[in-house]
Image 1: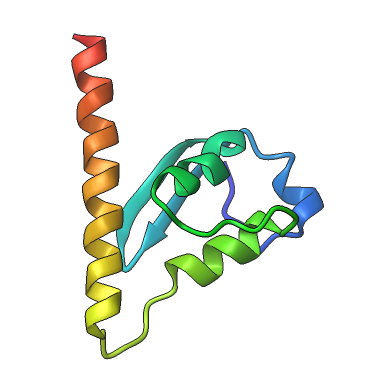
Image 2: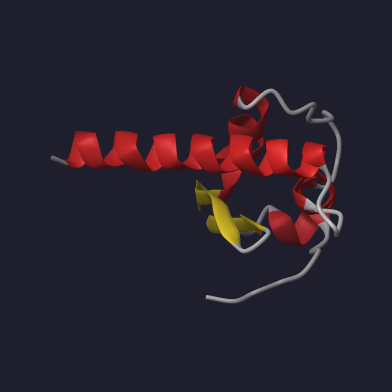
Length: 93
């Protein structure tokens, strides 16, 4: 396990698992190769040819003091992640 802040796109594609956080909350945990598609399903505009790490840094950044759009984004991300976790728990039981 390691923590890398803003890796190159080449380095990113060597990742197996990924944990993404925003404002101290986990908003994605899973297969790194599925992370971009996950954010597409959440209706984020994911550019076709971009460094995933740059995309995540931009999407998950929060302005302080928080604005209404930041709060809405965090609520959206947290609810989506919670839904994914609940779905996994139901499948495992």
